[in-house]
Length: 78
Image (cartoon, rainbow, N blue to C red; front, side):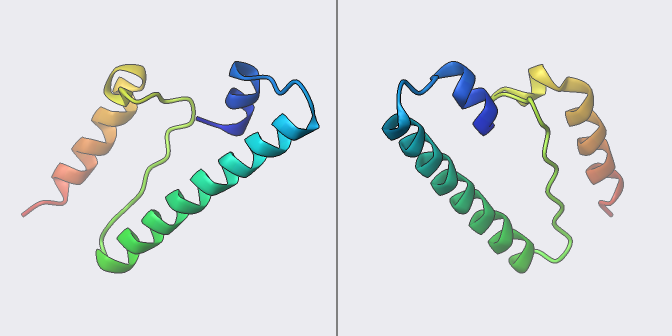
């Protein structure tokens, strides 16, 4: 979820809630960045594709994008 979407879904009622939302978002982003770094460091051929607006079931919300990327990956296999 993007920070903008979180603000729409859970609008902060005051500065304290906004600060908590900012902190939670920054923490999730830091964890994601670490996972991405670790993957790219461990698998030289890895590629990370971000799909803005995708939900947990990205194969439904972004079917064409997922199929394109899976096909591109499959084409690299021996």
